Image 1: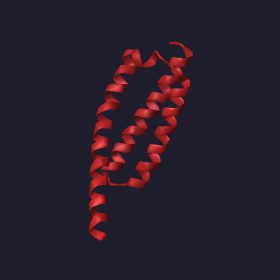
Image 2: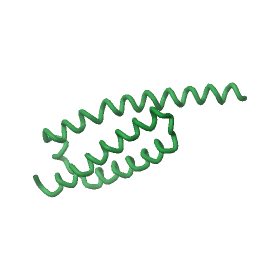
Image 3: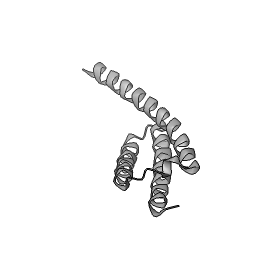
Image 4: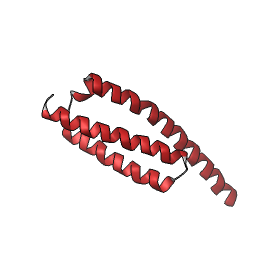
Amino acid sequence: MENSDAKAEVLWKKFYMVTTEMYRFIKKNDTDMFLSLLDQRLELQKQLEQLNNKTYHKTEAGKALIRQINPLNVRIRALAQSWLISHRNLNNKVH
C-alpha cells in the first residue's frame, strides 16, 4: 500500500466514524452536536479531496468502507429532511 493509500485509509475511517456519530445524534434530535459533526466531516472531505488519492476507494477495504457509509448517508438525509420539514411546519404555525 502506497503512502497516499495509507493516508486515505485513515481519513476514510475517520469519515465513517464521524458519519456513524452523525446518524446517532440526528436520531436523538441533537442538532447542535449533529451540526458540529457535519463540520468535522466536511473538513475530512476537504482533506480527502486535497489528498487526491485515486486508488484507495478501489481496494476491497475501501469499497467495503464506502458500502458502509452510503446507507448511513441515505438514513441521515431522510432524518435531516424530516427534521427540516417538521421545523418548517412548526415555524409556519407560529406565524
